[in-house]
View 1: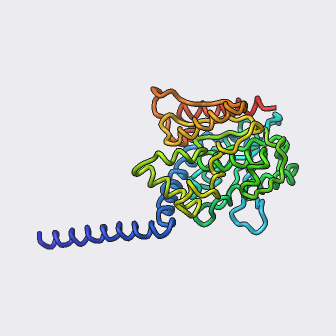
View 2: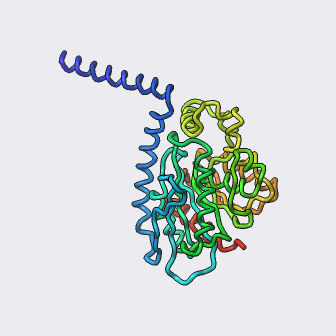
View 3: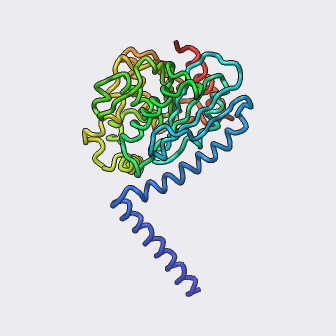
Length: 331
């Protein structure tokens, strides 16, 4: 019994030392926390990829890993197209989520194929994740991807004159920011961005479960604030992300103009990011920007973050129908 007690004591001591060591490392660098989050988020993404496979229609073909930025190994995109007769729908350019520090276009590829099955050409854009690459790298990469799509539209089978910028979670923030910069020279200038496409090319945005108003972080406490601070430190390289003017562009709601394109925005009723969606909707309404929403009443069964990927649920099927209906109604 004494040996068991000693062994247990050593084990507890080792665990405690490990936790202390992790805590010290996390204070010194954003990497330890980002590694933990990335593993968990990517595991969830891999499960969603498998779960969406049965919903992929047989008439969709994919061209994968097309380099869109010379010398940048992260700058790859996929093009998913239906082989059925064309319907003249816009091209959706989708940016994956993952708190800016995880995820990939590969993990949402089946979902994008499902959308393409409805008649849209859908492009999945890869970008550099943090902390290896910090803000605003991903926004610059997406701008370059849009320029590449414009230059190679015919060979890729995309309609570069009717682009819908879309995304989920962090990807929704990136897409919304880029749409905002394309339609607002002042917003682009605020981070020294130089869009190479014209505002009339972006005919809409589709934004799921996104982060659009960083002022909401000021009211967070405890574990929620620790999580947001950890993610934002990885994304920006600092814990001063709320007050450093270099990062004001992350809050899309502070920079939109009435020229922002028509938007479909959605979020679950049990999603911690719901406040961001409500802030964005209020901004769209204030500016008179045409928009559609897919929200859920408070007494609806809980609908969580990234609900749209769970295609076996009614909420996800509603989201898919909302996307298809929205892009069909765009000019």
